[in-house]
Length: 371
Image 1 (tube, helix red, strand yellow):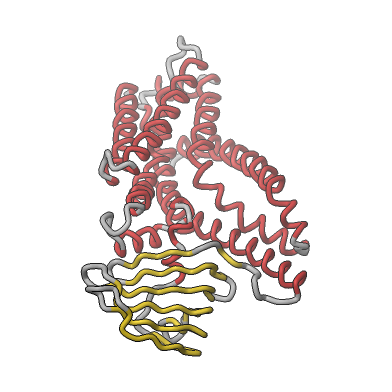
Image 2 (cartoon, helix red, strand yellow):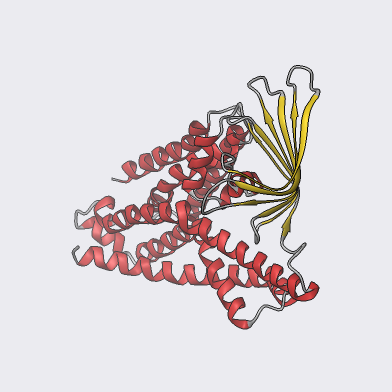
């Protein structure tokens, strides 16, 4: 990396750091405004409050990275252009790509960062912050009531495991205790006729040895052809090792696709089909979007550079406006394509890739014209 590369990179990264810190500060203030009241209500100690906001900050990064990248590039390159440094370098025979080479190399590195953020860091931050808030709420409810019964309960849980022919229903489920209450499990034959139904007051997922253990219930056998009861037997405790459904998989459709990691989305797509659960389409669109979003830093760079270093006779505000307009177009295309993908109009892979490929090609065309 020569002197020119270091100079361009230093000017840009300085502005990028300032914009990043300012944006994170504003988002942190907004988050504190939204969540601080709940933290006080749950009587969270100062250390837990600090830890909660520290965990939540990384969840902002994937959202703001393209925006701060665009703003910092437009400002830094605009400053260099107004001071005639870009003009002098071009007069010396250097092309735009040669002048901005260090920015493009950094953009490739930012693609890797974007992948890491979307695939694991942001979902982990969202999950940890949500789990911490749920734990603080659970601890507060236990302290107030003096018992863990009824604390930390989720709403009704339903799960149709068509692949293994089982349908689950729980009146309530505690994520803190890994226990379900008011549990009904129906085993179905290949024609989806009920063979066995199990009722239980409680059921617990055994993580170490696998399977579920049911407490204080009754097991009833049916004739699938007629629906008549064949036999029924009560039990105090019954372990069923071949019931392998994990609670996280049952509850996964209660979590927004944007809050799931790349590998969690992959697991959902592998486990379910669209025929088994139409909701899978939404998660498939999100999965492929994570892959396509990896190149968003390069798209932003391709949309920023040609307009930030426009000719000296062009009003800088015009170039900035064009760049911002194209970025807005990119955002709109993403939303429209995702909506079409979720509705099944477009294939999930096409819905995720078309906007990124189109804008990358458009940005490349503008960059080539600058040479």
